[in-house]
Structure formats: C-alpha cells, structure tokens
Image (cartoon, rainbow, N blue to C red; front, side):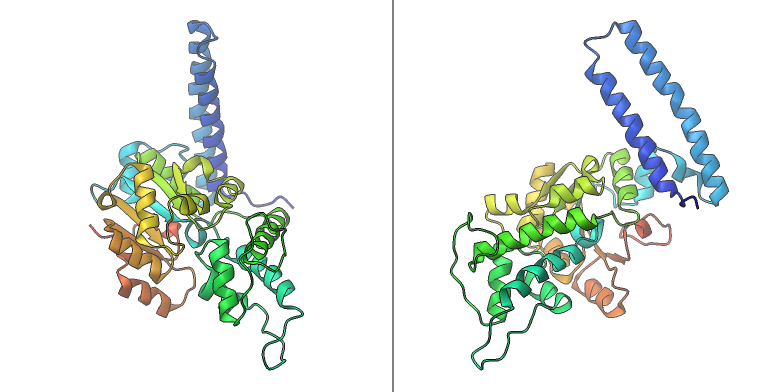
Length: 335
C-alpha cells in the first residue's frame, strides 16, 4: 500500500531543495564564470514553474486550496495569511506545545529518572515513596523549568533532599546534578528511539512568516531545543532561540517569565510591542502580557474548555488548537 503523502510535506521538501540550490549557487558565485552562473540560475528558475504545476495538480486532486501548493508565497500575500496586527514584525514561540509535542518525551525521561531513584526509598512512616506521575508531577513541578531546578522542585514535593553535587556528577548519582544528568541521558535515548515531529501547521506557519519577512524565535527550558528543532525540520525556519544555555547565561528564571520572552526580543532586535507571543499555559500568557507583547496567542491542544477559558481570562487575545487554525480565516485575531 502506498503511504498517503501530505501536501505540506511535499511543498516543504521542494522549498528546502530550491532554497538549498539557490544557496549553493550563491556559495560558488566567486568560482564560476558569470555566464555559467547565469545559466545555472536560469535552469533553477525554469524548474520553479513545473514544480508549482505538479503541486497544484496534487492540490486539485485532493480538493485543497491552490495557494497551499506555492513553495514560496509573495510577501504581501504571506503577510495577509498570517493576519498579524499592523506593526508586528516578529514572533516568539514556546517550543513545547506550540511547535512540537515534546512534553510527553520529557515527562517519560523524568519518569525513568525518578522511578529509578525512588525505587528503594521509603518515607518517614516506612511506606514506599510515591512514584513519578507524568500527568500530575510533570506539569506541576517540571514543565518549563531547567533540569536542576526541576529536580529540586520535584524532590521537595516528596519531602526529599539530596546534596547539590556538581555538574560533572555521573548520571544517576544521588545528587541534584546527578539526577539532572540522568534525565538528560534518558531524554537523548528517547529522542533517538522515538523521534519527534512538528505539529500540523507549525512548519507552514513558520514558512509563511519567513515569506512575510517576520522574524521568529523559540523559547524553551530544554538543553535539547536545538536538537529538537533539527529533528523536526524547523531549525532552518527559526532565526534565534532562548534555551537552557541562554537561561543560565543570562540568569533568567526557569518558568516562562517575562525576562525569557524579552530575551528573545533582544535576540531578534525588536521591541515587544512589535512582536507576538505564542504560549500554552496561563503563566506564559501572563508573561506575554507583562512583557508588553502586541499580540498574545494561547495554544490549547487539550480540548478542555476550562483550560481555553483560563487562557482567555489570563489575557490571551485569541486561543486556538494549533498554528494551522491561525491560518484559517475563521480564527479572529486582535486588530
């Protein structure tokens, strides 16, 4: 059976191939005779039209809008499709939950780490210490926090204290740093075993942002943000990021606080009043509002009406299930 091919995947691959070919011609420009370089550029230009024709034929067969078949969208049209408020020239995305679904793999890595550590421990009453519950412990104690801070917070929830140790502690050592290193080790294994894919619409939205001239940054407390972006194919569409290394270097708070979002704006060279923030929880929405972002978008994939309403109550200008829905004409953004 032939696997179903997604139009977004096809156009993204063609886009990447055409961009790579253009970059290659730019790199060899000083080594080729002008006439030869012109001939190569002419051949590349001639390849674009039949590529669009093939993609449009595919779109017609699938009953999809022909605009989705354009590898590159003209800037005015891309700006219209993004439908960002006037004056917004940059976007800052929380990596997990907005662009990719990495929370599950992070939670699984924490569970491996803490279940190993807690397996032979008992509380003051002699009873076994409760094992790690991904649905409760991850959002409450670990999501959005750097690893070392997350270890401290989770152990405190179980009434456990261990020595701080040192960053070079062996993975699994009964110290804060040893457990943090074990989590990093477990995460790398899970990423290799399971892999990650971008959410539907994430790549499309970032590609349109690039066509529109809108700069994009990612914020994440993970030390593996770069690896995740590469694995999901989003790295080439992101201009900069604020990850665990930047958080430590700039002494930023671990949660999605205003300083993390503001650091992303500094990297992009734009004031927050000319930027849009995309967050998944109330803390992130509050951070966007406090930082003074022109637009704050809540992304709620939980399908829980109460959570979506909580994002609105915290100040989200609009709440959508994902970035694909932002491109839908029915989604209403603040003017």
